[in-house]
Image (cartoon, rainbow, N blue to C red; front, top):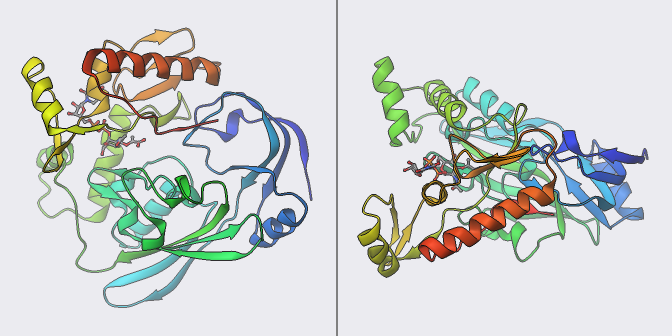
Length: 335
Ligand code: EPU
C-alpha cells in the first residue's frame, strides 16, 4: 500500500485550500479499501472535495476514493438501471447519461464533485434532487469492513440532507450509487425561469435532455464561479426555512423579499438574497470574499486559508441574524 507523506490537499478540494495531509493514500478498488480498513480505521475521506472547507491540517490518514466504473445493470422499455462507482466525476456521468438519452439528472449538470458524495448532501438544482433517481447506495462499514446496501428510503433524504450527514455520519464509505434513469417518457423539469428564457430565445418548444443540460450549463456558468479558476464550494449556506408568521412580519419591511412556500406554515427564503441585502455580495477581503454574481457562494481567489473563509462565514451569519432575525445554516462541511 502506497502511503505518501506530507501532501498538500490544495488540488483535492474545490475551495483550493492548501491544508496538509500528514499521510495520504489513493484507493482505486473496493478490494484495496477493504485491505486498508484491516490495518487503519482512523481515516479522513476525500472524494471530489467539492463540499468541504479545510480549516486545519489533517492528522488522520487522508484516503482519496478513486474507484472508477459505470455499469448498466438492466434495461427495460421505460428505464435503465445503472450503477456508478464512487470515484466517477458527477458531471461526466451526467453528460454520459444525456448522450445515452437516459433522463432524470440533466438538471444536475455541471455540479462539481464525484458520484460517491452526491447522496450525502442530496445534491439539487433547478427543481431536481438526486434522491429522485437513486435506487440504492452501497457502502463499506468502516468498523467491520462489511458491505451494506442502503435503499432509497433508508437514505432518509431531505433538502441537502441524508442519513450520511446524521445517524451514520463517519461510519460508512460509499463505494457506489445505483440510479434508475428514464429511457422514454422523460419527466422533464423546465419550469425554472432562466431555463424557460433560454428556450424562448432559441425557439425550442420540445426540449431534449441535451437542450436542458446545455441550458443549465450556460446558466451555471453565468452565475457560479468555475472552481478550476476561483476556489469555491458552491452554495456555502442552506436556504433558511422560517415560519409564515416571521415571514409576514419581515415582508412588511422588505416587500420584495423572494420566498417559496414549503408548507402551510413554512417559507423558504433565498440565503443569497439575504446576504446581498446585508451588503456582502461581491465583497473581497484579500484573497477571499463573496462571489460577485451569487452571494451564496464564498470564494478563494488564490491563497486564502480555510480559517479566514470560516471567519467570513461567521460574520455573515451574525449580520443576517442581526438584520433579519434569521439563522443561516452552513451547508459545506467545515473541517
Ligand atoms: N438572489 C439574490 N442575490 C444573490 C443570489 C440570489 O437576490 O446574490 C436571489 C435571486 O434573485 C433569486 C433567488 O435568490 O430570486 C434564488 O437564487 P438562485 O436561483 O440563484 O438559487 P439559490 O436559491 O441561491 C439554490 C441552490 C443552488 C442551485 C440553485 C438553482 C441551495 C443552498 N442552493 O440556490 O445549489 O444551483 O438553487 O436551483 O439550495 C449548491 O448547492 O452548491 C448550489 C449551487
